[in-house]
Length: 427
Image 1: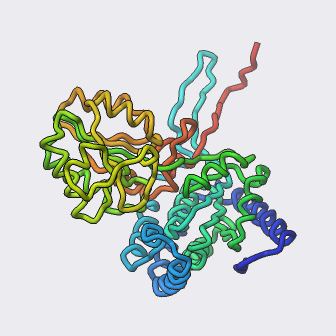
Image 2 (image 1 turned 90 degrees about the horizontal axis):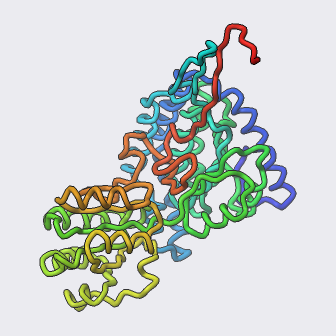
Image 3 (image 1 turned 45 degrees about the vertical axis):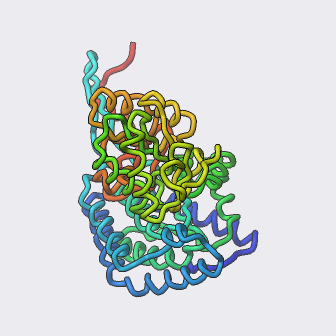
């Protein structure tokens, strides 16, 4: 399907219906495709991304120029930017997905009833998955590859700011499908920037089985509010690092700086640093100064402001903000219980970390924090499916039903029961 900047209302409705119908037809073939065929397509997609790297970079340069002209923030520009290294990362991620076991058809529980019925629980694809995302064009590759490996047809709707970049990447994915003899409609891209297309997707339960939104809080809330299709989503990534009274200062400095500053625009970046009041004198000053010297704006409580004149007063809303930028809120709490209370009040159930050498404090935190990912003595930037050995992820789910945490190939499956008998009838 050719790519159009805009479509009129009638054409858009017809286009979205056609995409949904084609995805459903493709799903019939893809759901039964053997692993060897799917992996052949994935490896061909990775090869195409490498071979067409210059075309992808050229498309991205045009998107970046438009984004700068539109005044996008530095953090958003970083999310949009593609480099040779990031393109290689996309290709490598697809290859890593190809190496994963095929989840489809896996029998992960079985038993025999007293009447002789043999019952097995077997993984099956979810069906047609629509992925709605903003800014990061690499999601096109990640989402398409994960859906393919898990036997799902994909409908991808990237952000308008990454329209050209996503289009260039998508062309590589369809080339890989064609090379393996799979239907190109197995991974489709919504061919317009028009936001009305998203509204159509919400109202297509006959064609779409799951919607996975990946973007800002406004997008997620809109999807959850309006969609007639089930949603796997996370809200914002308001992630915390808590430095306990028994924390090694060296470890705390390394983790707090990396968690915030490695990449500030990803959902696993820490947005709040909490420090145990018991080590305020020894730990708070170096932690605050490390962040300031790295170019981070620190918004702090009275104790943090006393450390350095560059610290600005924290306001109530700052504790609830996902900055996705070089900004962090810093404050003291009264031990583990104080940290738990703060995270419960202000966290988004995404990713939270404790730094401590106290085993009891660690277990209390890890057990009590109600987040999709909790870490001990490790940066929140590890909140990533690739870092979990999943090859890639569609997103970090904060749902409590079906999938929670990184959504990889296994999380993109459901299951059915296969029952084998020998003529049994029920009395």
